[in-house]
Length: 290
Ligand code: SD4
Image (cartoon, rainbow, N blue to C red; front, side):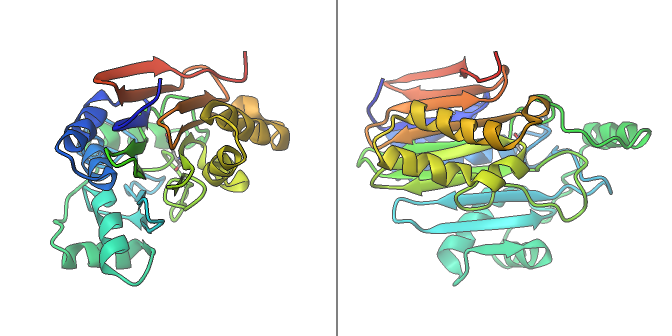
């Protein structure tokens, strides 16, 4: 299974990959496909780990992280962004319209308004209820595969063979105020090298950050590993360094220049979506802890 145009994403996000595929079929760039595809999940209020409907931090604030990277090696990100429905689009604006690569918090929000984005209340009734329920015990323990089921990391190759990627999330539910995860950090939650391929991550961001997982996967592919082998080695790196790996989940997906793909996680329950050769499929990833 190889070839392009193609798109893959973390979790069960067939509607997002379908939108990205539609954009690719119009002959548009992988970058356009990534932005449009990620926007679908950001706008889905039912998804409790991306965009509107995302579970809040422990103070009840929904704070979003996102980044985007194109085939020329350009990158843009927003961290700790509030009140904006489409952080992936703001990240793209940071990349294209500013001299910077990351904007945080209030500055990112002000920049979004200056670019015409509207202020939106991102805390839905369902997420507010869940938070109020959580406050009764206030126990902070990320739950494997549950609270994080739809943070979206997406990689696409367009008809010219050019690769782009994006990653967008509300981060971990009930995180400390100010916490930023791996998703918007270049090399950790996402990395693209158009000569080699791309990789993106989901799960406990702290562990992805400590091993710079996505950059590691791309470098392993540069050395000749398949995307599958590279994802497995990056998970192996976390297993080796974190004796408590049984308590958290990390999942990686990767693609190389030929459109060959790889998927690997620590635990069962990580799924991915692929749209390639006219087929939009969702399937379980292989995993380490059997
Ligand atoms: C984070 N990696 O903020 C993100 C969360 C995530 O699926 O991926 N959830 O740590």
